[in-house]
Length: 205
Image (cartoon, rainbow, N blue to C red; front, side):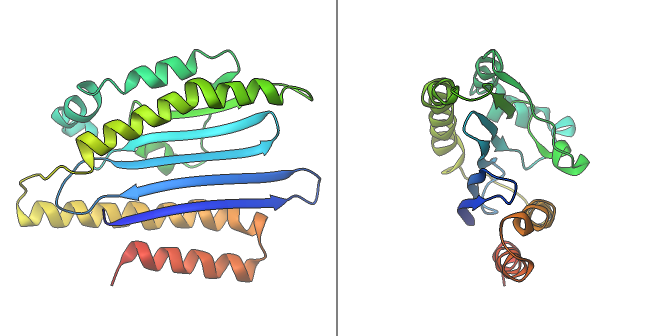
């Protein structure tokens, strides 16, 4: 493991209500090309939740079909996306960033769960404790067994390209995601400090 980010944010909004964001991102190092693990839950209300859950690919998939077969086809992780998208309250979530949308795997769970108005908190709770919790646990199990401990033989140049690609994606994602959202939660001074420290950790020495 090269880097792990666990983050929990809670902030009351001036317009009323609150926003809660929970993130778990685990980046692997250059000893393997196996996918990273990413999970983020964004709750803007008691009955709504945006879910981002993926084995985050580290290869350009159209030119590496064997990578798709190894980490996504052979592991059957797409079944979880299919099952979650069958839930009536689930609809696709579309990131406003073109870059972010281009980075997900084809099996990624990227959804917006909307359970309606007041009194629907129980419906969201049932979804979270049911299919969502099951799929998240199973995806983590696949990642721990098939990705986290894997070692791949790579040429040194290939490894350098892989690590450089990881750093470019991670630092760009920090700027796009955290720089856009943290000022809504904290004041700009605090937000800039948080982003700078996370950016430094991603870039390394």
